[in-house]
Image (cartoon, rainbow, N blue to C red; front, side, top):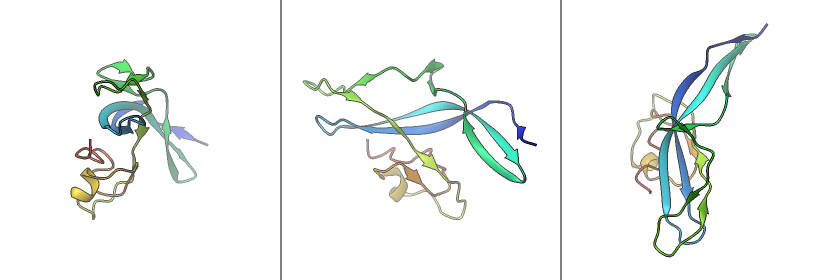
Amino acid sequence: MENLTDIIHEEVRQNAVCSGCGTRYTRLVLEPIRYSTNKGKTRRLVCGLPTLNGVRVYCTVACSSPGCDRYLTFDTVRGTLNPTVPCDARCTNAKGCSCDCSCRGKNHGKAAA
């Protein structure tokens, strides 16, 4: 039998790159999730659209660079908690969406934007 936790909100980082001018963007959003335990295995389930300052994040966002009218697609960083690996410049300057350090994705790509 599957056991589900209550829905909680976790802070996750999302990164985007403008396809027109190359400007990098980053933001923190709250993602509604719950954990499911079945036969001793735990899964993380996303339960809806993320929110930013209490507002759902499903609207399109335009690049803010002068003269650029492209829309951005944000990718959510999927981090794996690894307390033995300290969060450092490799993480904060990263350009991908996969994190494997002690921040679990919260700081991933933060300085690259």
